[in-house]
Length: 166
Image (cartoon, rainbow, N blue to C red; front, side, top):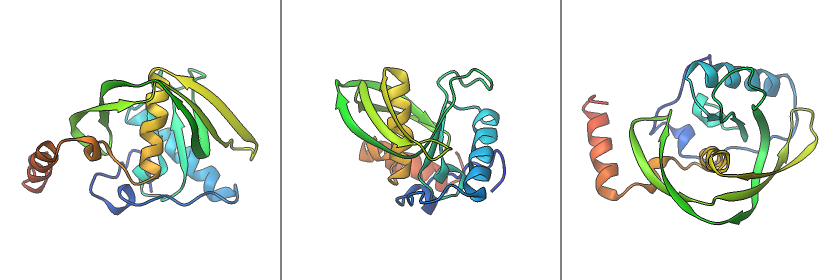
């Protein structure tokens, strides 16, 4: 696992549920550092550990996509405990390149997780950041944006990938 090595669908890391983090050890600290570097090199607004080949329940979110913005959130074992509202918007994904998919998501969520110091954290999130959190948590559960696409759109995309056109 190295910086800027994004796993591409249908890699098994993107289709399986990630394991909960039980202990914040050096491996977890190194993973977080690698993920942060990868996120900003990509560049992206969010990254889940499975996207760099680690079936670990960790996400990074930075709606600004700018290193040093102060908006970076690192969350371990995130769980959405409440959802409100719905809207639809187009999403793209670093692990599913060259396609966008219209996805309905909650507009406001309450997320519980753990920070890098092992302390419980709770965040009420709305708007674009809420969409990012839901997208990244999907990755932890083995879901990608193609799972929201029509069967036809998914089929066309996969055929193009097989032929090397994507």
